[in-house]
Length: 386
Image 1: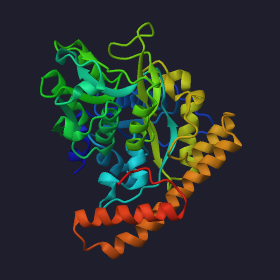
Image 2: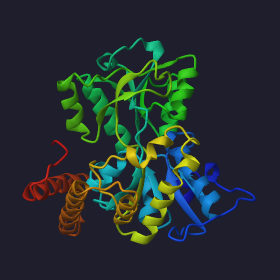
Image 3: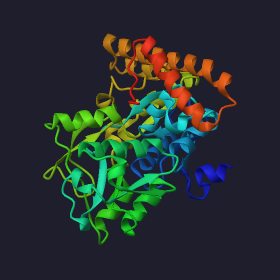
Image 4: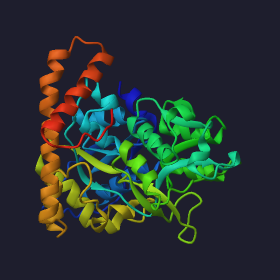
């Protein structure tokens, strides 16, 4: 089972011979820990490796980075207590909300919470093969767009970017892949024309240097109507000027979109002390890893998205307060998100057991209605249009 989820043959085990470990008295990390991340070579995986190496060098902690092809596989070890952190993308939001693959009987709304997240010079959008002569998102009509089985984050992200150009899934040719890495390999092999990713991900750079080439169709913030379409599908996206990545430099920036990625995700049930230690280790040792992976600069305290759609864990809040990066307004926003997770859990607990005998499709549709009603009663936004 673990081999199916993680592809352990390609996991990174971080070890530094002869390292000196000067452990801070208020940062107590375990001798070893496992974390999950996106596929090998992606921005999320590379950042997880860089942070893991810091933990090994500074605290003697052996960190195993387990690559997993979709959000369910990334989050399952965290839920089971076999991983300490899951480096997630927008899938953390879908898990919190209990939608898509997380709306099935085995899952439901998850108490996923943030330690630190990454926003840097990169963007997150649809990369498009240069050889198909697409210039704008709307030009993808009739083209092959990649989707990943079991990865609602990637798929919803693709739909949101397509919405900028007024397109839906029915307007393109969906091509399904088993993983993020396989989808981008499909770009190089001419099996697909467009794939969602960050501009600094390794597979995007590989696609850019392939015979097909790669472009990122722009998403100017000035088109308010187009951005309203994006936000209806993915409220976690924001306009962003990308200045780094495959085919992008500070001299040739592109107006794209972004959201925090990767997000060092924990569960609300994890102890405050352990999450505090991991978060503080990342904060106080930032200089030790910031240059060791593209995008790692975005883990800086000053770069944090303080009012996003998923709450910070209390242990992370403690570390952020000590870093003088927490305001009363941040606390109010965070409290509201924690309350939202409680509303969703209560709705799920009342629904799931009573409807366990329903078919998967009936169960999901019934849950989405109960979910919407519970949020409306609590005067909270649904976040997903029916």
